[in-house]
Amino acid sequence: MELSSSGTDWRRAACLKEDPELFFPIGKTGPAILQAEEAKAICRGCEIRTQCLAWALEGKYDYGIWGGLDEDERRTLRRKQGRARDMGKVGLNL
Image 1 (cartoon, rainbow, N blue to C red):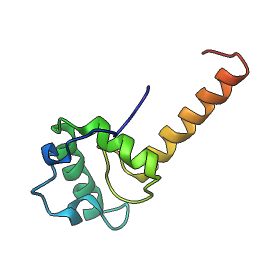
Image 2 (cartoon, rainbow, N blue to C red; image 1 turned 180 degrees about the vertical axis):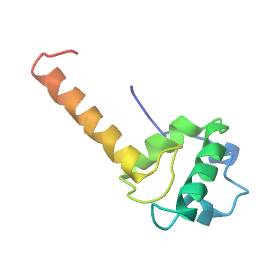
Image 3 (cartoon, rainbow, N blue to C red; image 1 turned 120 degrees about the vertical axis):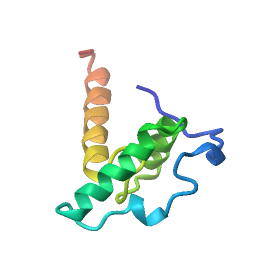
């Protein structure tokens, strides 16, 4: 999957009028889980979700909800993308 954030009109972001702190839950338990799910729900309805995720991956943002994924989910995606690239370099197209 090719992701790119270039040329994105960020004014169309669903999160634009939301409290930015919603997208940066503190912790991984209790209220933080509910907060992260609320942020991800907003992302699911966003027309520029893919570009937002690309922005976070390109910039290696380590914290917060970006493009509907938290830091652990983005880290997993980066690893999968890296493995897919590495396999392609040695001719293993899985």
